[in-house]
Length: 130
Image (cartoon, rainbow, N blue to C red):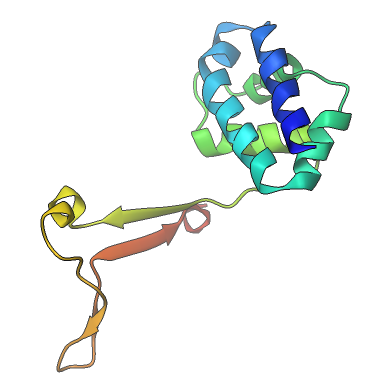
């Protein structure tokens, strides 16, 4: 089912028809939808069984977005197009050491003498921003 959904999305992407806003977002949205198909068989099945096309999906994503839409909102609209009521969760991580960690041992969570923890990586859910 997963492979069938991915093939359907790729085939419909090759036949894509849409305005410039939908075209600008389509490759990123396609990649996310394929990733979600790989994560969840039920979502993949919803895509396979849906008679609407990826062009229809992108038209729905671009609808009422004005001059811009966040990536997260575009992905949510695409997921809901195929699976109404579904939602996505997104977590971003900041690595304060970054590329320097390639040359240094990784710093892990430790406790100092005051009992406070030090972290080299901070995590934040995008849901906290809304």
